[in-house]
Amino acid sequence: MTQGQQVDPMLSVRGVWKAFDGHPVLRGIDLDVGASEVVTLIGASGSGKSTLLRCVNGLETVDAGQILLDGSIDVTDPSTNLDQVRRRVGIVFQSFNLFPHMSVIDNVMLAPRKVLGHSVEVAREDGMRLLKQFGLADKAGEYPDRLSGGQSQRVAIVRALAMRPELMLFDEITSALDPMLVGEVLDAVRALSRDGLTIVMATHEMAFAREVSSRVCYLHGGVVLESGDPSTFFDQPVHEQTKMFLKRINAPR
Image (tube, rainbow, N blue to C red):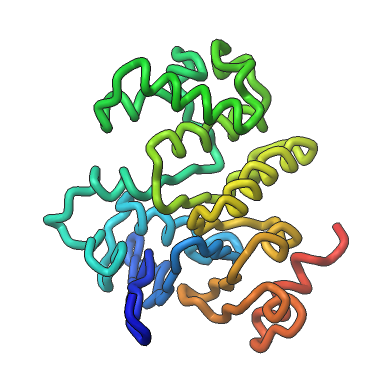
């Protein structure tokens, strides 16, 4: 790269609008995410965090605006092959969505075999390496109903990683878990951030957002109302709405 040359963000969201039944949820979202960044989306329920993530992955269409990967692949273009997008962009939801009739290792191997065309041997080797990395190697032969919520969510993360994505989206992945199990899932995301994986995540875990984020974005009224590095965002918020949200979410329960 020559001096002064600009590098396209890994993800670029430009003026994205999305409405459901005539009710706008996203009202012109703008967001850039660079390689190896961890960008955290926070905001009240209904602020559009999940909708934005689903639009990035092509699971929802947009009404207006553009979503670009590496400055070249337009997720919002109807002619774009979304299977190609989803090979590069993984997503994990709060519900685990594991196939109950398949063992853990078979859940992990399925997409690499069917989508990437990997052999059983290669898919199994990669899958076992990932399961070991996340402390789940001894669960490879188990079925999902034998796993705890934290284990199931870590398997869901491993299953997404088995596709070797360049960008990972996490949508409130701890919200369905017992508080005692949240830590093990956050540890898994923490390890991925240390490894330099590009991550966009929606979360209510403010302490975790402060610790791992490159940037925190507060969604309100369908736009990114305020964003900044974690220390500035949490310690010196500018907008009154941001201050009110942080005060409310940090209030003793």
